[in-house]
Length: 308
Image (cartoon, rainbow, N blue to C red):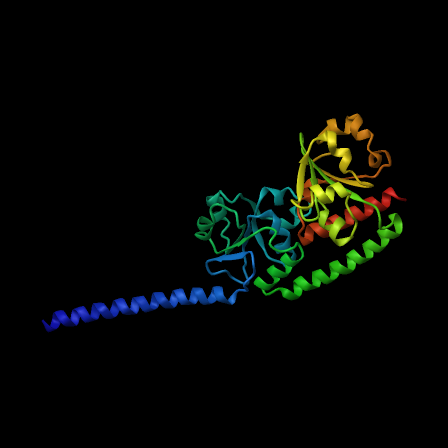
């Protein structure tokens, strides 16, 4: 009987110790999560490293932010790999989609960045810790500061923001001296069959034209497009939305060629005055630091060239 009692006590002791060990592990994980900054729109899955070595960026909206802060990207989406601004710097990164879990796991990430609407976040978290981000929760510049907090790179983030502020101020001064401050701009996105208009927070140069440089949009753009961020329209009403200048983001110069050949397009004053600026869509989709630097240079050169 004594032997049986001793055996039971020993087993109970082992179970208690195992439970304590498990609790310690869970508490450690919770502690690590608590050490990460609480950022509205950022959700952490697993023990997120603050100095990751191999990052999989599964949302193209954020890849440029991560690269600006010097993180090593080992996996990126098709949008990133087709983006001329990022393609060269991505180097040996593998092209993967969020649904291809096997290909993603093969890149051996120690952190995954994904959009909050990604359907398989739990499956991704089984591969590596995940930061899921709600798009549009913070403005395009604040997002860099958010990442700076997460990765202990607040100085690097602020350095870029300071440089950006000075660069924008100088560009704005040159442009307003050239064309004045009262000119209106329209931002158009073209696919093979559709025409879109974009506001001040949906990429395609909107953040630069409207927010950074302070140019205005025609009233109908402000009323119909800005509230939602974008608007799909028919070609027949496009003229009602065109300002003094139009920025056209398209995959190629022949995208939606029928529009350019139409009498309606040729009758638009901005077209007649040579104030249409064509830009590559795949380099203008996003509003991360890498994209912003590129877009600002392209837009300044194009606007000044029109007026020289």
